[in-house]
Every structure is written in structure tokens, then in C-alpha cells.
Image (tube, rainbow, N blue to C red; front, side, top):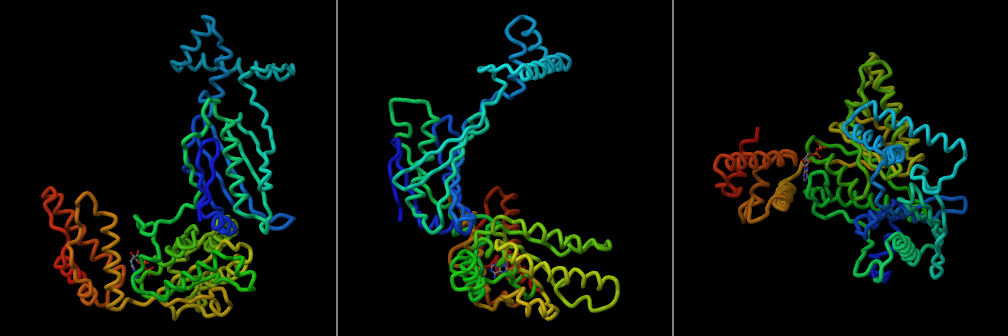
Length: 484
Ligand code: ADP
């Protein structure tokens, strides 16, 4: 549903205001970032978020309007005042421009002394370009929606901030609309007056930025790109829903999963699934590799892991923390009595303790740990509820490998095929590729493709573009070459 209204000649559309408000309960929603306004307004940003106050939970509407700053830095303005217009001033100015350090020091010294003197004498110079304007505050209200925003003018009026709060139980799309109106009202007061309505002919769309379905870089991995593993993907989608709807969880006294343990052979997509889950939740992704934790110095590893959790308690935005290849720590590896085992046991103990506290302390965080050795994993971690979801990620079967080929090829084509460039021939027999790649993982299949891409690119470089698209034969040959 889209609400639309007119303001100062502009058409404003608010896309799914209800969804924006709901989403803001969980994550701050950033709006209007890309909208263009007439000079001198340079940037407008509206953030809708949720906060706890003594009066209960509220929705916070916070906006910033920045205008083009006076480009002349303070120092240069002081110099201009000191130098004035006489010939000596002009000479000094020339010297400063030429980089003469002595002239510069004299003038800056005089400037500082003059400012101090004016201050001491309590002289008020209304046109003094040196003295910053006091920041002031104001109140703007939209009577129809009953929304009141405080407006503060900061940094010499180059930054105008608006802020309004509405109790969570009372907030409606009308409040969001009113906030947008107040922002536009503030914007128009900053614009030079003219005959026409200040924003005539402009169109502003207030919408949540969505994550594109087909990611164009490997950094933005989505669950859609995962081949096979349908049940796991479905489970992760459920976890993402539970993460995004804490209010529903709270209403039913339900607890969302807090820790996920993924185990399976290397290259089966555990890291990929974690990244994709973070993306699905809309969370930041932090990957922590075991070698970063383990420190050969006494007590170093303990310090490292404590630091990681200390940081994690402070994450203000939803964050997925991945402990990659974590078997060496969450496993029984340290059953022996030697120093190395003891150190690992100490780290494991801290990890368990911190895991307990973390989720209580910071509901923004979800933890995933991956391991290639499930049988080594310390049962107490799972039993105690620290990792309440345990996911086995197996090697893909024929059908799954076929799907992995299909998705990877589609992805490559989507990213690279343009301007008449064809990357793959039509009519590839994906089922055959799936069959022939028996025993391979997703990572192996990626390598199969990477090698073919490299071969083609090298041919291209040598021949100046006279290369056939990647064929079934090329792919089969690459599979056979990679098979041990
Ligand atoms: P793991 O963490 O299990 O060792 P990764 O997630 O690092 O495996 O897998 C390496 C790469 O292999 C991934 O980035 C992805 O490109 C590819 N891959 C692995 N499994 C799959 C899959 N099921 N579907 C699509 N791609 C996969």
C-alpha cells in the first residue's frame, strides 16, 4: 500500500508505511537517503527506530537536514579579518598563499589574539564571522496527526535536526506522514524564496531499501543462491522471521533460537548459509576465525575471546557472529592435561559462560558456529541451550549438485552477460553435470567453474575476444580434471 500526498508542489509517496513502522521495531529503518533537494539543502536523512523510555516503548522519528557549509574554513576567515584590505594585508596574504611559514604564523597569531581580546572585553560583534551562531531549538507540530517535533539548528545552521517520539501502541502511518511533512516544511524554510512552490515538480519516495533478490556480488549471498539443502534453507528462513518479530515471540513467551551449530564436511556451504542468514535477517555479519582467537602466549586466547564478547555486547544493530571452524574450541580437544589442552579448555569455558550472558545482554546478536567434526563437539554446549539449533550440512547428492550448477551458472550469467556477451551456451545438460560431479561439494563445483572461466579469459586475452561461450564439453572436462 502506498500513501501519497502533495507538499510545496512536490508529490510524496510513502510505500507501505505500516511495514516501515513494524520493521522499525526491530531495526532502525533509514529513509529518504537518496532523495535530491534544491540547493542549499544537500542531504536529508530520516531514521525511524524504536526505543525504551520510562513511559514505555516508543517509535523515534529522527531526521537530519544538512545544507552546504560555508566552504571557507574558520582559519581562513580569521585571516581575512586580520589581513583586511590594506597593502600590507595584501602582501601578507600573498605570502601565505605562497606558503611562507613566518607570514602565516604572524597572521594566525594576531587572529587568535584578536579573538581572545574581543572575548575578554565582552565585545559583541554581531557581524563577526568568527563567532559561531548559538544553536537554537524550536518546536514544529502537525496538528492533524498530533505529532510534535523538536527542531534544533546546529553547526551554524548547516545542520537541522528534527526529532519526534510516539508511543509504540499509538503509532500509525499518519505519524510517519506527518514527520515527512515537517521535514519538508523545514527544508522549504531553508530554500531561497521564489514565486513558485519551493519543491514544484519534485517527487519523493519514502520506502525501505530492499535487498535485491539476485545479488550481483559474492558478498551479498542470499538463501536463494543455495543449491539443495532445502530443509535447512527453510529452517533458516524461519529463524530469520523469529529474529525480525521479537514482539510476536514475546507475546507468546517464545524464545527465538540464539545459537546455531552447523556441522558437515568442508565446502558444503556452512559459511555461505551463515552469510545468507545474516542477509535474510538484515543483520551485520561478523566472522571470527579460530586462529584469530588462539594465541600462543599464556592468557592471550582468553583475553581475545573475552574481547570478542565484550564487543558483541555493544552491537547496536542486529549482528550475526560466525565462529568459523570452531571445532578446536567447542570440542573435547583439550581432554589431556598438557598446557595446550588446558588453555583450550579455559577458552571453551569462557566461551560457554559468555554465550549465556551475551544473548541475555544483547538481543541483537545471533551466534553461528561451524565445525567439520561434529563428533568432537562438546555435548554440554548443545544440551545447555546455548546452541539450540543443530544443523547437519551434508555433501550434496546428484540432484543437489545439479541445482548448485544451475544456480551458480545462472548467477554468473546474471552478473557477467551484457552487451551481447554470452558466457554459457544454451541447452547445457545440468543433470549430467550433477551426475558426473559425484562426490564433489559446492566449493568443488565453484572451483570447476572458476577453472573454466580462467581458461576462457586467457583464450580471450590471447585472441582478442574470439572465444566460444562455455559449453557442456568444457564443463565436463573441468569436472574430470578436478576429480581426484
Ligand atoms: P563451508 O563453510 O561448509 O566450508 P563454504 O560456505 O565456505 O563451505 O563454501 C564455499 C563456497 O562453495 C561457497 O561460497 C559457495 O560459493 C559454494 N557452495 C558451497 N555449497 C553450496 C551450495 N549448497 N549451494 C551453492 N553454493 C555452494
